[in-house]
Image 1: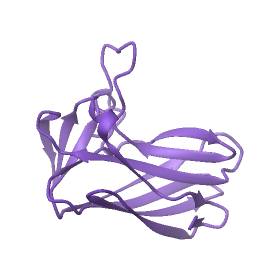
Image 2: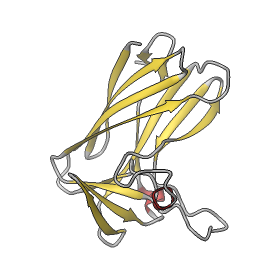
Image 3: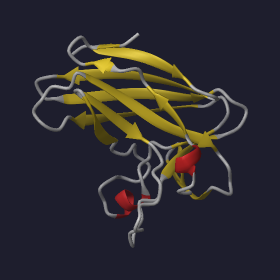
Image 4: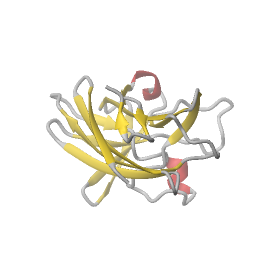
Length: 177
């Protein structure tokens, strides 16, 4: 299983991602680092949602499972993004959780994803949501070791920046240029 890496430059952030795909297991491993290159803190939406933590599907402070969608033509997009409030709103809404990343700081994470279905994907990409850290949009901080996680407003789903990797070809184990 060989790995490929890429860097994605955003406004105030750089995402470095390394993908390793195991075709026998149909499993993608993503190791990443996000660095705050701006002058203000960032909210990084890789910590899942409050409902997943409360229901025991996710460990508090850990990287959450990515959302995924088939975007057609053999392409799969994985994402860690703040999601808007579902309509109708559930009794226990999936309130986004965000890591607070100070200016100049870097955070690392990883996750594995077992690809659904039986067809081999032709290409895969991953998007990470980040937003300006504004105290009127985030509250209830909790510390888990070195990680500070905050509950985020659903409104941040509309204003977050999406840092997306280029498309990854799992057969050739490389990113599109």
